[in-house]
Length: 263
Ligand code: PGA
Image (cartoon, rainbow, N blue to C red; front, side):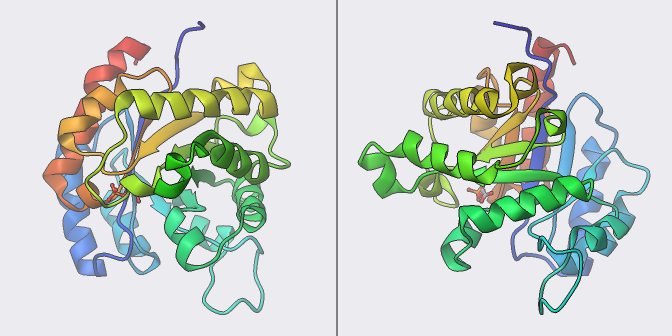
C-alpha cells in the first residue's frame, strides 16, 4: 500500500446552534488550545448568521471557516439561499453538502447535491460531501449499495485535478446524534470501499488524495481508535463540537496520530 500522506481534518458541524455572540465565545475557547495547529486541519462550521463573527474571531489562527450548506447558482431568485461567492466573501473555505439531515428534512437528492458539489469546487470552496446509510439500510445489508449510489451520483463531473479540495464524510445516519458510533472496523470497511469508488471515479493517484472523514457520535474517547484506521482521515463532529474541551480533545487525538502519517 502506498504511503498515506493525507493530513487529518477535524471539522465541527455546529448545526442550528449558537447565536453570533455565543459562537464567538465558543471559537475563542477553541483557538486558545488549537488555534496554531498545523499538523491537523481544523474547521468550524457555524450557522450562516455566525459566519461573520466567527470569521473575525478566527483571524490570525490556523482554524478555517466552513458553512453547512449553499445553493448551486451564483445568484438569483432563490429566497432563503446563499451562493458560493457569498460564502467566499466571508472567508469561508469549506462547505458541508448533502448532510443526512438535509437529505431527510429538506428532500435533497443526489442530483441536487451533485450540482452543489460542482458549484462549490468551481467557487473555490472545499465541499464536504456527506454519505451514509440508515439503520434499515444497514440491517438489510444495503450499506455499500447506498453509499455507492450517493458517491456515484454526487461526484458526476468531478475530476482528479479537484481531488485535493474534495472531502467525503461517511456518516451512518443511525450514528448521528444517537451516541451510537460505528466501530473502527465498521467505519473502515465502508471508508475503504469509498476509497475504491474514488479511485474508480478520479484515478487511483487522485483517489489517494481525497480525505474521507468519519461522522456520527465521534467523541474524545472514541476518536483515537477511529483515526488509527487507514481510510479515516478525520472527523465531522456534531454534538461534541459544541463543547470546546471535547472538540479540542478530538483535535488532540488526531495530533497524536499525525506523526504516523508523516505530519
Ligand atoms: P454527531 O453529528 O457528532 O452529533 O453525531 C455528526 C454530524 O451530523 O455531522
